[in-house]
Length: 171
Length: 316
Image (cartoon, rainbow over all chains, first blue to last red; front, side):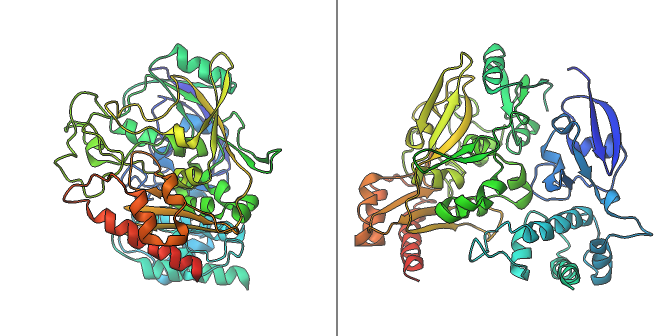
């Protein structure tokens, strides 16, 4: 094993680390940078608690190595907003009570922000009837958020929060 | 995870060279399947060759009217590509029915083809598995085998190939293009790319050691109606119990490929020709020689019913 230097751009700041190649992006964020907003749920890409936005796209940070992202821009929940200055999606989750225990919430919010961008970019989903006509609907959000599990089953309120932000974007 | 050394490949040929030089090496692209398996120590590479910065992420028209898809094109981008949506709807649909948004953003075209089975005994390192550890036996044969293969199985393995994308690629007669360490290139038809288990279920593809996939080529569009219908235990983010990919072209020609039935995307030429005779005829030809267990015999009926639904969807 060779400790390997790498630089990540996390929430707008360059951070240099020297890592065991086995370090996942998730462990680099949590254990090395102490950005513990991103959660470790299943550690196998099944639950979505570790979702972060890398180079503008949501991914499971548990299923990728930090070294594979040298130079990449990474946005975590800490980068989206703060308690004093919440991102509209964070505010909407609070308003609509889109959680109970809150463990999956950072992943849900990162995913939700990216989902609205994906719809805006015209990326189709399994429930898109005409592949060339992509538009917001609750059904689209349910399908696209299926990689984020909430064991408290706050799903109706999560959908309401995302709908709120989507409607706000249109207004 | 077992320790490994890491390098970033400089070119496809160099990647292949590095893989030959390090017999314990694996290429890593999206990593969504490989890292999962490494955490469970089902895969234990001693060296990882990161191929993510090689380019190979473009989709370009070929001279004969088809598309060349770079090996590293992400599943999201392939499904959303304009020409794929327009001309190869079955491929878009297959991709979008697989995995989650996060995984599709990372998973690559070549990696999707190379993903391993989700057989629970392949994943359970306390159980025998000829695919994970050749010669140890198959725990699925007399185990929980509801979701196992019924076509092309062997006494050594009844695992299925989990990919949706590969089923569409097989239906479309795609070709896998590769390069080896000495720079030799070749094209492997999808029909020959994945293997049946036989007595070497650990060897899953036609790739030689170190051979590197550079692209997947689609022939010119078939036109007509494209359908991908997937049956699964939950409506999103689940592997297929069974899937049917179908094209009904404008000349009345049909073709069908199936996921969840075999160790590879399943397609039978004799069944393709029976589209005009309906679901039962197609199912009978496609499933000739089926070998079922008590738990997975339902896949026979399910295939016929899913085909019937596909025919109904075509008429709708």
